[in-house]
Length: 93
Image (tube, rainbow, N blue to C red; front, side):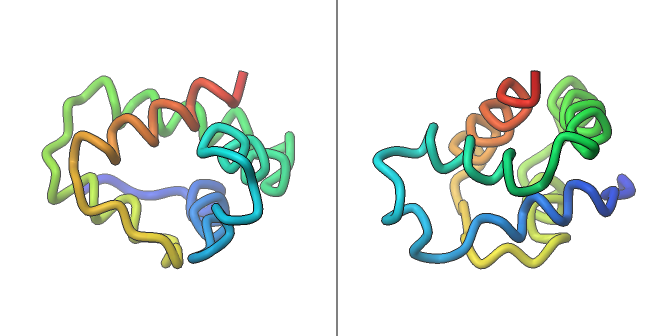
């Protein structure tokens, strides 16, 4: 079981149910969350996500990782969650 760093947990809490409605698309929603979490946490989150995505972790573990921060937004589909995490990682610079 992979340790989920607090920086990533903070990021997941930025994805509130209904907050997508406040932006024009998913990309802007991710941008907003990345800004909220703060630049000082970007490297830790990017390193963690790179490790997760390169390992090819199964869907169950991927869901556990996403849920570790208790986000108010669920992504049930494994492929969609991988895409979402990849987009977050890519936005971190």
